[in-house]
Amino acid sequence: MDLRGRKVTVMGLGLFGGGLGVTCFLVSKGAQVTVTDLRGEKELKESLEALSGLPVKLKLGGHEEADFRDTDMVVVNPAVPKDSPYLKIARDNGVPIETEMNLFFKLCKSPIIGVTGTNGKTTTVALIGEMLRKIEPRTPVGGNIGGSMLDRLDDLSDEVPVVLELSSFQLEDLQTIHKSPHIAVVTNLTPNHLDRHGTIENYIKAKKGIILNQTRKDVAILNYDDTVVSSWKKDCKGDVLFFSLQHPVDRGAYIENDQIVVGEERICRTEELLLPGRHSLSNALAAVTVAWLCKVDSEAIAGVLRGFKALEHRLEFVREVSGVKYYNDSIATTPEATIAALNTVKGGIILIAGGSDKGLSYVQLARIIVERVKSLLLIGETADQIARLVKEESNRRGRELKICRCASLEEAVRRAEAGSQRGDTVVMSPACASYDMFRNFDERGKRFKGLVWQL
Image 1 (cartoon, rainbow, N blue to C red):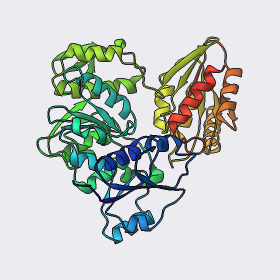
Image 2: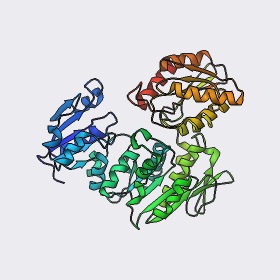
Image 3: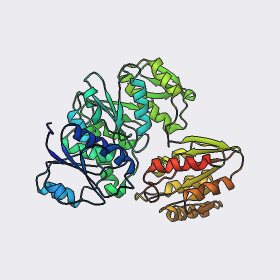
Image 4: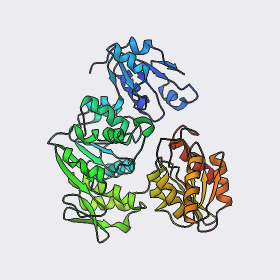
């Protein structure tokens, strides 16, 4: 792919490194790059600082038609809607449209291990990376977990696998170039991003891209306990392995007598894992299956499981104040993720939830809240919707639950502290996206942690 002198428009610089990474890559290959974003300088401050000194033309605060018509290529951020009128301009003028991940799949020489699912992707990717580094220290991880892999292309070889977290948006785009990973891992599937995909069927179709373009030489590793995911076996062209919390499976990881077993090998006892909750145990089983398939020694696998701690924003323990424990679970942007958190933490639970609406149902979450939560503090766009459902459920059960709507996260943390007592647990697990009040879940989680450390 000769990019020297070619005009390329990057649509969407973003804040998680993808737009930044592809821009730096294009410049390094001699392309004439224009970066355009609807957001302004203030919102994109960190990304713009990283571009300082590079010969890049910036068009911020809006898009211009000419940048999509009079160019040789458009590289689009996966979050940009498919029906964007500017992408239509590019298509109508015969301009190729690429994404950062599509470019990586086209140019990568290494075998790719891809991980997707509604929840647990990042933890599973991180675990796989740690395990594979026991036999190949150069194993990189990337994708939706943050950052770009394009700047590492020259360091990759066909001997070293790459571990990627893949979102539904990225997989939707990969289907246009008929690419899937060599090893595809699917953690679970529950409704998500319906504001983008419209229906659960479209969401599942996008996720299914991880296996649809595999060959007979490829491998799919599926969650046996998820009926939707396990049903994909019939659509897999290559080998299929399962992992399960509930059933023994052939050639995959499962639980037997509170031990993690894979193949004929017993890895370790489940109680030895530092990661809390059955959802984390399921993620561990997925990673163990990959590592076993890649011939990582069982003792090395066990060592990683025994030492691996929760990642930032993923039911992350912040601190204990006056006998009250505080957890940051900002990554929980679906009701199912928050339910998993509520089923994991102990003590009288004070839940901080709410945020921007992704078109999901909070009915099941409301039931779990009434069962498990002592006090509910709500923020953001979905506060009224969640409050109504919880109130209806609590009335049905005849249980009185304290519900408080808060104008800010700061107010929620103050009220949580004031209403807690020794032995309680305060968990910020929103069940919603963050975009109504924060730039992203990372900013939301860091703000929460900062507030807790001020207590």
